[in-house]
Length: 471
Image (cartoon, rainbow, N blue to C red):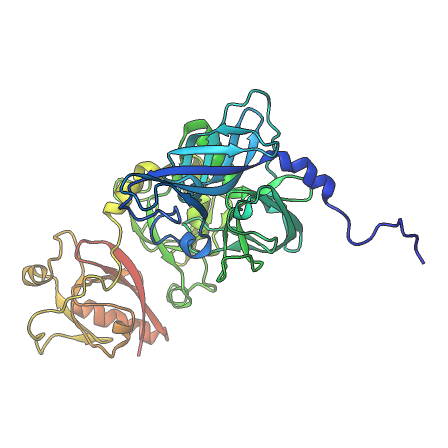
């Protein structure tokens, strides 16, 4: 029998935890609200996925029952990244706060100033003014972490102060529809309300993630927590520290996924990449270097496997950088050089030319289509003449063949094609008349194609790609 003094159980992480606890802080905020206002709990934008995944812990309301202002307090976590007083947390922890305070492990408290926020990754950078250097922790490389690696979370669950939990990385690259750059680390280390904004450490004591969200039907940990990886967060924090805002790269295109049907229509062996559905006027590639219909499969040496890979790769690239972009165009791989613009400068342009959701402006043509009008794949076609432009309010700049009616039982209706849409191209060839459409569909049938790739324009000229089964 082993001596009673022999170590029992798994190896202790006490030394690691003791070294790190001093760098993790509790973030408390207060917000003054009118008594007749709805309490802003949780402090996240209305409709945000974080309402579903991670309601922040709230406590205390002053002046209850009175008509005067009252104060709502919330609690979260954060961590020191620089001994001079820079602290990282989540944006939704401090959003809307009038006062922010950092509470340290030794019991000291310091008022915090907001340096900058990034709502797209839900990150925020704070600054306190300490009398002496603070205990700080370094960023690690989240790209080196593997599923099954041990991790440690430290935070402020339910306002209880510095709490340590240990688990493993359960998955990588999770998309929970929280933002455009979702690439979360999933962990089973216990994360609860109040842990938000706290660090996720590797066993070297390096921060490899910022705990941001949980899935929790009961409000407590069920072993599914999500952290923003440092491969995404470190660049954002660096920009907030240097500029007080983010300065992301911008390509200036609208994209959509490459489905199996689209890949087949384009003659691609695999469904991969991001399909360019439109080029934003005034953007970095409004010079013809990228074209509508291109499929981007590589950006600056990084493979674009799924559509969501592209926005993240572009956003992480410096503004003004010249990068190589590999596209599939006319069944060939083509490499083009693109100089990136700044996303924040281009967002208004993008919004102005964004494609409306299909079906949001659904209206049918008045009257019955002419009996002589050709019908192809359930779509009744018409010339884009002055009368049809007026009927469907189609801009003069739009060119192609107008769809005047759609059979509700057709494959076109399944794809949410509607009257007033304009067919610009079929199978990457432009069409100008209803006869062009009929002939092009016939050609694709003769080539034994099962799907036709249609480039459609709405009444404003915004483009999108749709595949329609050839019956």
